[in-house]
Image (cartoon, rainbow, N blue to C red):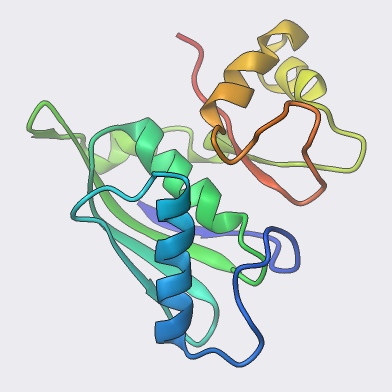
Length: 158
């Protein structure tokens, strides 16, 4: 749980210019549903400062990461307030465990990055790039189509 800040001017265009927070909230919900990521019981809200709050329960750490990254990749979203609770086998995963290595959960793509280069940097092995690609599907449709400023989920090797 916590607040994640992102680059506001990059990502998929979802918002218009003069929408209310309620209209933006619905567009975020629609965007998450487009990828099949919004689980029952997850709430979305958007405030005037372009901060999106995600709250409720998710069934895995991976689902939590994908929700945050997908919202972070909406142009205009400045930050995501993560209030999601991870419940696995009817047991809540303690916040400390869910947030372990939070800085390693996400990666902001820089100019010149490739998934192989990112995999080499975070895992020490460029051939592990499919792991990053799969963790970011369906948001990513091609391992060669990433862009500077994009936020990617970096899964743990296991």
